[in-house]
Length: 117
Image (cartoon, rainbow, N blue to C red; front, side, top):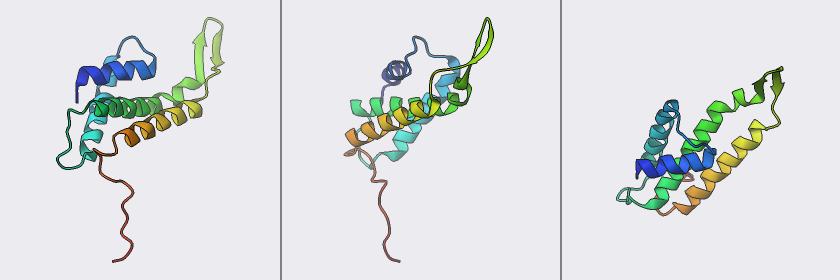
């Protein structure tokens, strides 16, 4: 995976122009999460993994910031935002699901279940 590419994709998803320093640990954890989900022998340099890592980072970032998105400080005081945190979380989750499907040949199957012991 390519860190610069992941950063650029994250900025695209988040609609930001610059990456705050506080977001770097979120990106690092997303890369680690994707690496841990890889099948043995999977190509870590596959470009699809950059998109998945950026989507995972965007989901985690959205989870972290969702609570504070409910109000905005203005000159006249604090007012409710017209954005819906639940809607943002749902979109971010759908984005991760779409990129997991795209990368399914590289990832371990998370749906495996032992039927009998």
